[in-house]
Image 1 (tube, rainbow, N blue to C red):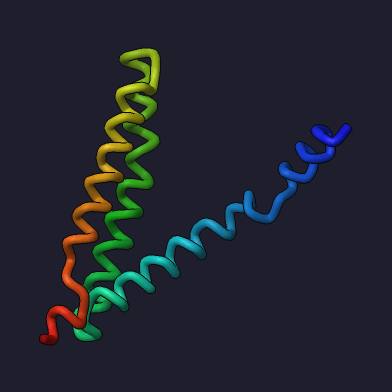
Image 2: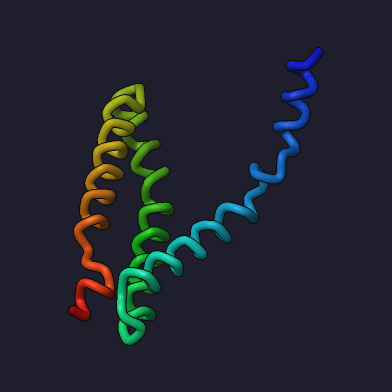
Length: 103
């Protein structure tokens, strides 16, 4: 009984609405860009980051589908995606902050 209730609640959960995801993505980009870069280049950094995210968000599913058709599974594709996420995390951590640039 409890499992059916949970499944029914999860299906209609607000966190699964598609409207939340783009809003959280755009605000997180704006926050990171404003904290990591100077105000003079904020617009450029934000535009490049948002463009890169939009490009990869549109091409990624296509590449996953092509890879699935060729190999019959997603294993290597998911491992590559995990590696790229870790690489992006490392690269973002290497970006100097505003305070480090000013001193």
